[in-house]
Amino acid sequence: MAGEDIIGQARTGMGKTLGFGVPVLHRLQTPGDGTPQALIVVPTRELCLQVTHDLTDASKHLGVRMLAIYGGRPYEQQISALRKGVDVVVGTPGRLLDLAEQRHLVLGKVRSLVLDEADEMLDLGFLPDIERILGMVPDERQTMLFSATMPGPIITLARTFLQQPTHIRAEENDQGAIHERTRQFVYRAHSLDKEEIVARALQSQDRGLTMIFARTKRTAQKVADDLTERGFAAAAVHGDLGQGAREKALRAFRAGKVDALVATDVAARGIDIDDVTHVINFQCPEDEKTYVHRIGRTGRAGRTGVAITLVDWDEEYRWKAINDALKLGMPEPVETYSTSEHLFTDLGIPADATGRLPENMQTRAGLDAEQEEDLSGGKKQRRRRSGGGSGGGGSRSTRSSSRTNDTPAGDGEERPPRQRQRRRRRAGQDVTADVTATEEAPAASSDTGEKAADQPPRQRRRRRGGVEVVRDAGETS
Image 1 (cartoon, one colour):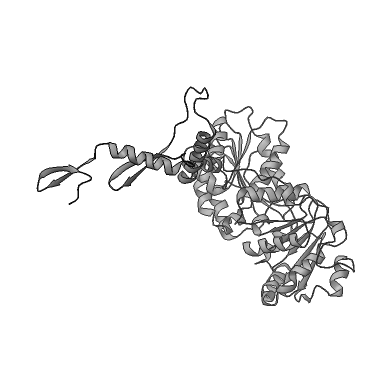
Image 2 (image 1 turned 90 degrees about the vertical axis):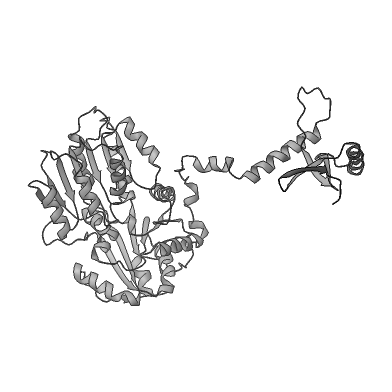
């Protein structure tokens, strides 16, 4: 609150967003002149939306103008909002840097700068972008850096750009990285049996919203499709989906229309959704940091949670490294199948549960009940109306032809519709016929032929040896 530089280090779910949000909002000058006074940099689009949502709720009585800037959305909407004026900007490094270099985002009056989830931005390769952004903001500012871990490059960044920072660690030195309120189960499972295990785990007693994590985008989509086919209300969030589809899935999950969200690690950082009771690692995480952030989606704000990790035989070495780093005391996962007794006992699964959700339990509205926001700005629709020269022309000529056929001559119209004419060449003669002449085609063609015979023959002009020769079209060589 005094404006000093801060390094904040805490486990996930400890409330870091309001930890920096309250001082940022308190130090704003309102009403401002429309130039951003505070900049909050986050690693992912989902976290950007989350932070913006939380700070918007916290400042609804202050008249603060908030703007989220991230990739996947049209530039025009964000540029228009910046021109109208904003007080706080929350954004991802790439899009922030683009707009700043284009002079649409002015950083010369930023008084508060926040780097949230700095270690994740390091892992995603954003550190050079962060350093360029830090070079654009004034030296006289308050800088707050938050990170769950403190690797060497983050410490170097803090020493370079922070002035005598206070390092606050919101936990005891010997405290574990995982909340004690989260029960952890680790099973060694075959890859072909994992869907069956997940389907039964989703029928556990007292299960609320559930997040299922996969390592790859393809696996996440495959699991979501498989669960939907089994009767569960499931949705996927991964990098191959457009931004509109990702936001649609998260909105449906928050609203309870979908109760199983299958995601890659893009959703593991900072997403705070109430009532997430279970987290399932469909594949073993890459390292202990990923594991902590994945299962940190449950057991938040004093609640209890369940974390289930499925380890395949070829992933055992990875799990042992995670177990040793976090001192979990579970080096050997229990061999488990979808019919194993201990699976039903551990998770409170009814004995008659199968791999398909009974119809009387399919009460969620599902993903289709949530509308997807159109992020194209209507460009696709305009292209569809004006595109396709042959298709558009064909439809117009069809309408013109039908109008010509249906409208009798002399019906009182001031300007009768224009009839299209077709030109053909028969034996050197130019023959003109109406397109609409259908029933009297033989007679029309003979009459036209007689009229054409009465007309003088056309002349051809050719140039031979520099001399222009004129002769009738009907002559033979």
